[in-house]
Length: 624
Figure 1 (cartoon, rainbow, N blue to C red):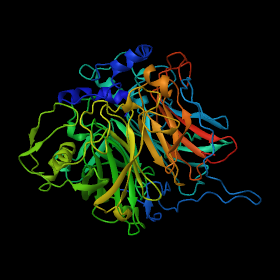
Figure 2: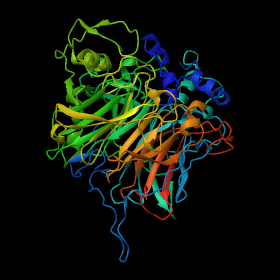
Figure 3: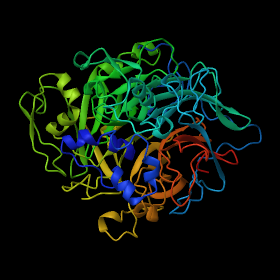
């Protein structure tokens, strides 16, 4: 979640009595970095308060990084070395970058290169002109990249060498306002055209990319290229569809994402209200949306209500040998809970069409972390665990004077529409902003708890009151089964830096240090990567530098800094080719201000969120 999202959600949060994340509100960011005021002025402003088709699938057993293959293919292994060549070495040997880097560029080790692939406003649809410095109509903005690039995934294309080409599918969390409108956007007074322009800048982009003469680029005019936006129609399915309605116009706050074993993309909505166009009912937002990037059968993308409505961050799956699967999700609230959704049926590994409604039927659970290092999954089904008429929501009791409130759960639709309250009523643990979750090759599950400066009541899984730097937690399901109802957990690390005077901010990190872990992913070789979303004021950057991306050794807990972003940005989104020689990383909301000066990535245009390519100069896997 970017600070922009935190601000956009503020009216609803304030009305409910929930506190903001200290250091992440617009006022605090500007106070810490006055130069940012110029960039934010004239932007959204403070007033901005299916089916699927195909045949044949890939192997089913494993984690969310077991495949990125397109349906109808087998996951491509790393290419066999040519005669006389050594196989690729995936050991981690790169020299960690120093701390406190605040350059207005993407910084990587000397043995690496990085360059921009895809920026907000770049053409997506065939024939689109793209942003060139002048404001555009909604017909134009609807055909180009949205703003605030976030979660993404690399999909293989049948018949294409996946090391040289594929589909990059990515979320757009919020508008890159500076390239959209000349004045601040106010949904209460905006014209219909202004609403369409702003809503076009959220959602999802699907782009085909290819390696040409050693450099990745977007394949213009590809038939795969497509936008899904805040103006697109989405079908609603699952138990809450009768309440929400059959169709919702728009997806919103598409933060992180995930994918399924049958090769579809799951974009996650990180808001439960529509602050961009409040005329649309709030119940239409806060869902997981399933999209087929190959567009093999026409049909609307689908909002899957069985997976719950909350401030979704991403999804990550674990599958077993019988094709039973669980999807893990975090609620990026302050605080929020961790969830697991288990479809009722196994997925079909031979025909994608048979999985078209798999996510409409299943059971949603919320996690309870016990003090002894054990945990359990609490079922969120109407009539169980206190989810009945006349229930009492205890509220966010860990940090606010939130008064308990009555709530009725008369149907499963009530539970799913009010999932956050249902988890609290059922007794799930309130966590310090659970953001990304990833499942490793060994079935270990990791979750970033980004921060929670307002926590007053601690527990074993959230041990620090006033936790401004966050931590990472991991657990193993009993029997490493996605169907398990119990697990064992531990804290992998507490973020922070030993130079900080306050004891609760020192952390216990080894090697490089960081604040506010956000993006996290275990790659197919079992290596753990972490991205950060810390505040960008001097009190943070003087210790940690600009936001960054790191390798974390899961055994020694040593941390190495691989990449540092430009001024004012968040590092998010991680995708890669199957051989891991190319990483794709998103740079969200760079400001281009401060001592470094200049706009990024183009000095002649407003700073824009962008996707960058990271590669080793010697062609080795990233990490070498």
